[in-house]
Length: 183
Image (cartoon, rainbow, N blue to C red; front, side):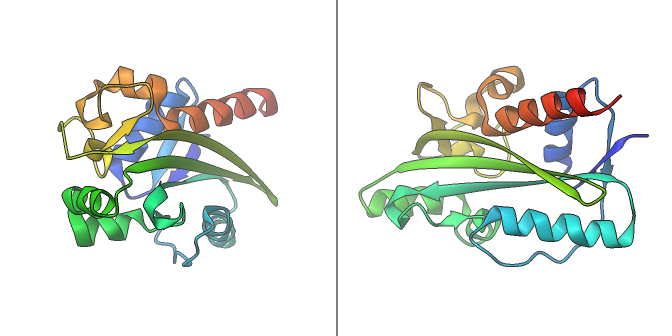
């Protein structure tokens, strides 16, 4: 039986599927209410709890947050989707630039639920937001340049991004957990 990854985002699913291989996962598009919180742990725990009320199975949920130092490392956080929708990547860059500080970090938090047990797996990349460059990534990827790289995620080939991204770090931790806890 495959692990169910609750997401409507095909790009996230493809990345996680690739990163967890050969563990079998399936995309499960379950419409769940998302609570509003600056704490991604609360958001994920709520989603997993709601999913388990609807169906007893083994689930994973992902939340990726981006934090701008110029916004006290609090925002956009889990609200990055709405910032992107409102400001677009260029607008997020311009906001940080206008405040004189483009430092940022991105965090992927994966939640895994089986029965009553919920586990969290986190990956983080520090970096900066820059003017949009590249079209090889989705969402805010073209404006995020991780520390130690001269490229944004939008400029990186898939394998290069997978080797350094916060999603890959979190997925690696989840993959180790699944290997050690499944027969």
